Image (tube, rainbow, N blue to C red; front, side, top):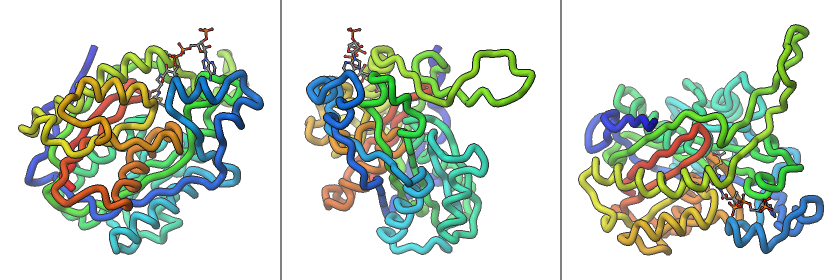
Length: 333
Ligand code: ACO
């Protein structure tokens, strides 16, 4: 059954809104092509490109998800003209951090030399949109001048590299943004359909001498076709709900920044959103694969640094993923 928070934090000009004053991203330098994967997996460049649009991905060698997060955060701070000491709160989304405790955000705080509160949230590939909404709630409480949001993933650490149905789809990277009080977060829509069968990364089963269950490793399992069905229906629906609540229309949108999971999913959504030209969907998954919570801020940073986002542009960010979760939000640039 669908549940939705459609009454909560329905953006708009007023308490809880913010503006994005800087973006940053970072990917590890090691590039892995589809042909590199075909060396040890029963797959091909043709299959991966035609089913997903992915041509290559960046994969960590020595780096951890917090290394990527710190590099992306520094880039965002520089872009915003802000220092780590000015940040009042750090929020991170991740599903592939190197520690369960301390949080990713706490490690980033330490390494940046920031003196502020820091915490993580988990919503798999939808994490970035949950970060934005959580940020709006913190701004609504007042007292925050600058906030740092980071989506960071070392997906290569939680993939089963013997499973061709998942190993070819994901990549590593991080994206970040600096937020300040403003009037540019206009609305959102969130849905969760609790389900541990379609996308799951179990916790390690541990070493308890009394444990009597099946031992398990923290590696991803995904039912691709079920995820695909969930994504193609929910992606346009979330955008339409967010637009409706903000009193806006599809034709008002200048850009859609979707979670970069699969070109075919985005093409299908674009066909259902005739008011937005297909080339206004910001896509870079051919270079990075699916970087989960990092994928939207990675694309946001690329479009920002390329000078494609103009002041006043209306941007929809939309994601889906483990949970199952799906969400969209609207930002005025
Ligand atoms: N190379 C070659 N063949 C493969 C590969 C591969 N890498 N992977 C699967 N196959 C085979 C399958 O075994 C199957 O073979 P069979 O017909 O002999 O059984 C065949 O290809 C078709 O498999 P499907 O899974 O039906 O392929 P489909 O066309 O659905 O594409 C895909 C698979 C790309 C995974 C697609 O379903 C998809 O994109 N799903 C959504 C994934 C997604 O968006 N995930 C994001 C959320 S993840 C998160 O939140 C962490």
